[in-house]
Length: 465
Image 1 (cartoon, rainbow, N blue to C red):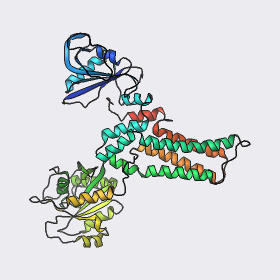
Image 2 (image 1 turned 60 degrees about the horizontal axis):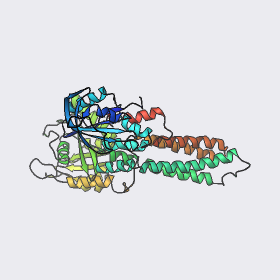
Image 3 (image 1 turned 90 degrees about the horizontal axis):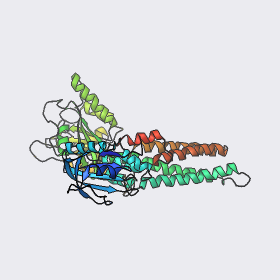
C-alpha cells in the first residue's frame, strides 16, 4: 500500500439509483478530476471552491469530446477532510455503467484503485480518528437497529475512546509511581500499604464493567439471535410470518414442511431480532429432515433467545419435555400456541410441569382466517427480557471481539500485577505486567497497535470506505 498515491473508488452501492458518488483522496485529487471534467461550456474546469458543489461535464481521459455524464464535483482540502488529505468527489447519475466508466477514467488519469477501507485507514494514520472511531464506522454501516445505530454513533463521537483513555491515564499513574519507586528507592518513598492494591482493584472493576456490556453491544449491533424451536406442526412457521408481518415461510398441515432454516429480521422496541424458523424436532425423521433437525439444535445452542412453541391443543408431550431440557440453560419464552382451539393445558399447568416462570409463558395463535393472538404480548416480553434494566441511556457499549479481547488481556495483566503486589514481590515484576496492561489498552484505540491488527480492522471495510 502506497500512502502517497491518490486513490479512487465508488463510495455508493453498485446498482440503479438517483446518485452515485466517486471519491478520491490524495495530493492529486483535484488535478485528476480536472483531467476528466470540464465546465458545461466546454472550457476547462476552473479551480474548485472548497466544499462547494460545482456543475461539470465528465468526459473520457484525453478525449474531451467523448462525454460520459453531467455531474457535480466538490473538493475538501486538507486537513479539513475525512482522510486529512485532499478529498474530491464526483456525484454522477446512479447506475452501474456510468459510475464504473467514470472510475475507469479516473484511474487512467493517474489515480489508483483504493483498497478495502483505505480511506478510513488514511483517516486513522493522519490522526483524524482512532481505531474505535474507525470500527464505529463499520458498526454504523452494519447496524440493524436504531439502538445499535445510536451506540455506534456514540462510539464514533469518541465516547468509547474517552473511557479507554481514562483507564490508560489511571494505569499510567500507578505504573509511573511503581517505576519511580523502583528506579529511585533512596529519593522516592514506595507506595503506602494498600495503595497499589486499591488502585488495581478500581481498574479491574472499571474494565469488568466495560466487559459486562459486551453482549449488550453485540446484540444492539447484530440483533438478538432468536430461534423458533419445537415439534413439527406446532405453528412455528405461522409465528414467523406473524412476527415478520409477511408470508415468509410456507405453512401446511404436513409435518416436516420446514427442513432448512428460514431467516428474517424484525425490529422490536429499537432492537433487531435475527429470527430463525427451524425444522420441527421429532424422532424417526428421514435423512433430509434429520439434517434440518440437527441444524435447528445447533442454532438453538448458539441463540440469544429461543421461542419454544407448544401446541396447546395437544398439551405437553414427551418430546416437548426433551426439548425443554435442552433449553434449560438458555433465555427462552414458552409459547402456548393455537389457543384459538380448545386448549388442553393452561399457563399455570405449563409452569408446574416445566418449571418456567409465568411471565415467560405466552399464549399465542396465528389462525389462517382471523386476527393473530398474543404477538404484542410476545414483543413486550422480549423487550422486557433484553431491554429493561440492561440499557443505560447514553452509555456506550463494546460491540466487537477485538476490543473485548484487548480488554481481557489488560484485565488479566492487571490481575497478575495484583497477585505480585499481594505477594510483596519486587516492583520490577509488577511493572512488567502493568506495561502489558497498558499495551493491551492501547490496542483498542490504536496507540500501541501493531500493523497486522490495523490490517485486520480495515479488511472488514468496503473499498469505497
